[in-house]
Image (cartoon, rainbow, N blue to C red; front, side, top):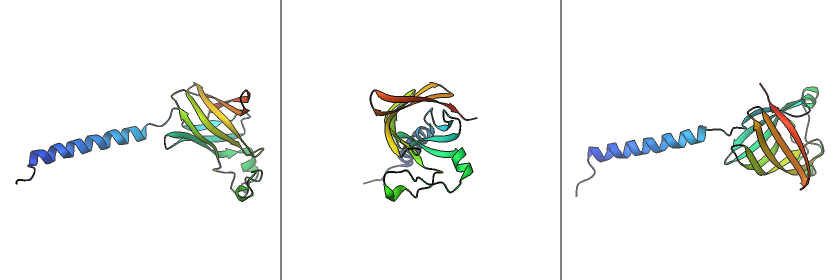
Length: 148
C-alpha cells in the first residue's frame, strides 16, 4: 500500500496553516472595551482585558496607591484575601456579551469590600457605563472614560 504523495502533504500543510491563521486572528481580536479606563471619580485607572471568553478588570493605578504603594485589600470579607496588593487587584470578573453590552459579571469594590452584580455598556468608543447592583433594581451607574 502506498503512502500519501507530495501533493497530499502540500494540501495538509496548507489546511493546517489556514487553521492556525484563523485561530491567531480570532485570538488577537480584543474586546472593544479592552484598555485602560478612568473611573467616574477620576482618581483610579482600571485595566479591562479579555479573560478567556469573558471580560475582566484590574486596578492599574489610583490616588490611594500613589499615596501608599503597599496598599492591601484590607476590607475584604475573606480574611485570607486581606493581604492582597491593591495594585493589580482583579475587581471585575465574568462579563460576557459584546460588542456594546456585557452582563453577568461581578464587580468587587475594594473601598467597601463588597461584591456587586454588574453590567457594562459601551456608550461610545471612549465612554463606558458601568452598573453595579446589590439586587436589581438597587443599582448605581457610573460613567468611565477611556484613558489616553
